[in-house]
Amino acid sequence: MDDHDDAFDEEEFDHGSLEVELREAAAILDPVPAGLRQIAIEAYVLHDLDARVAELTFDSLVDAIPVRGAVDVPRMLTFHGGGLTVDVEVGAQGLMGQLLPPQPASIEVLAGPRAGAALLADDMGRFVADAPPAGPFALRLRTGGEVVVTEWLRA
Image (cartoon, rainbow, N blue to C red; front, side, top):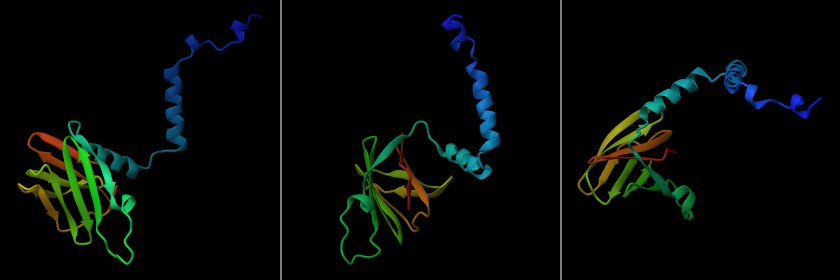
């Protein structure tokens, strides 16, 4: 008998049918919970293909040296993306921030799978929200014709 006869013949194997069978098995043995599927769909609706992502470059929870005796210290965040810097302070009284270079902008606080508060940055790039975000959040900024979205964080 020839070694070729015993060897697996790659050309006869149907990758497509294997994928279908594996998907069916996964759907039966480990189905995606309906609630998680709905959250994923709602989160995708918020996805903006034209938006630039502003990456987190400073987080006081990670990057700052703790001050002894300080309590209820606001969280300081800095994002960079698309030639824009966004400085944000998140505290018990709410959220405030500034865009650099200073410029007016409309800002949405994205909270979980839904859009949250709508804010406006003034000519100096300053913006304020009276309530802090609860749970995961991101900011979507519209400055002129550009859209910038920050990374998602937990409040």
